[in-house]
Image (cartoon, rainbow, N blue to C red; front, side):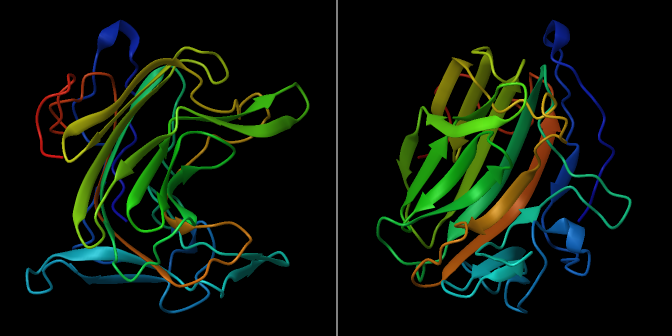
Length: 273
């Protein structure tokens, strides 16, 4: 994956970065040989592939396909895990993952296509998540994008408590169509009500929150910051049927005033549903 220099741009004084730190359109290749690019090792050939755009196979556009066999997980330290997630921003042994910094706005945009063969119903699968709390997005069945802006574990000085999820928003989608999902997270601290969260789908603002808890305080726990992961994941319990997501045009930036860079408006205007 293409990794640009991760230049720190603080929100202090309201200054924005106005540059992408990282982009990937999957036109060049899909370096699956670099296992650090993925949350778990590739255990089947069909898990991670680079394929033609399913909406227009003759367009010359290539995308990332994440396939998850419903009852065939990967063994990780003796535990069966059902996930095919890309931890982006890593390139070989010397790369670093991209993550949410404190006291700074973090922007993420990606295109998502849920294959119509993905089972409908009440089952939910992560499509974008960060480890140990932090905001997340899930697909419920194949036609609901569930966004969880406030998702965290409270640190008590020695351990994390139970996972807390608030401000959940369900957004209808249609399987077999591309959606551009853009989010901005401002994480002043981790476990105080001083964060911000904005989300757009196809340029239309769907979520605008202030005064929220933006994640678990991993630094207090002596752990690394949470990375971004994209692709299907439903834990240690098999899901009936196969899940196929396509992902394209990942973009990542830091800084407050990047609305124009990502083609969205700070108000509720612009774009199409």
